[in-house]
Length: 274
Image 1 (cartoon, helix red, strand yellow):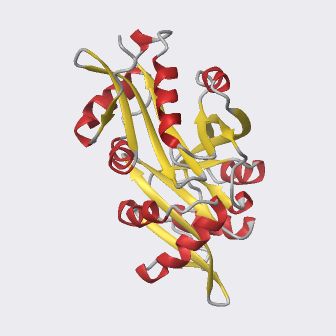
Image 2 (cartoon, one colour; image 1 turned 180 degrees about the vertical axis):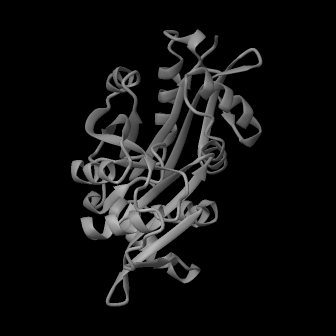
């Protein structure tokens, strides 16, 4: 196979991407793939008519880029396809910092490409124990809050994700904000894929605010909730509320350290986007 023949993927490739994910034992996350294919730069490799490799690049200006959904069909293992896709995405990224969330299988490849491990992200999934009970400290997001939310997000991530957030408002199932003296100091979003509601992003000024935002979003979910967290206290809090640890991944960075005030970023939108 000619690994130089990397092609752009689009929404018409959704079914093939879902098949590729299933081939690797990943869930068929229909809404996640739809969002990423629509708003990211997706690249793929084909073997005849079959999609056998994918990677999706999300660029946030010259400071930061994320790469996600790096997959290679099982029958094409050890043929260098993952490395070819990653190098292509890295060339296109043109950012001072590029980040990935890596499975155990992907860590060796990313190390060879110059990435270093910077932390662990724990995925918790279950039925939230506080269903139906609100804290009373948060309120629903309105369109008038978008500029404030975009500023909070830029401060926490160190990048301008304004276009992404504008699209996320339409994609999200629920968004809530928390205020102090009439000023928005944090927000949380959620999105549904199948029977699971993913809570993210969550940006807050304190642990208490983050937990209250998560609790108020999760309290409305009659089903499974997922959280991706990178700090032990929040992981313990989630586990105590019916969300046991399910999976884990390694956060890896190439180039400069992650920008922004990361102490305020409690959960990502999704692991493929940061």
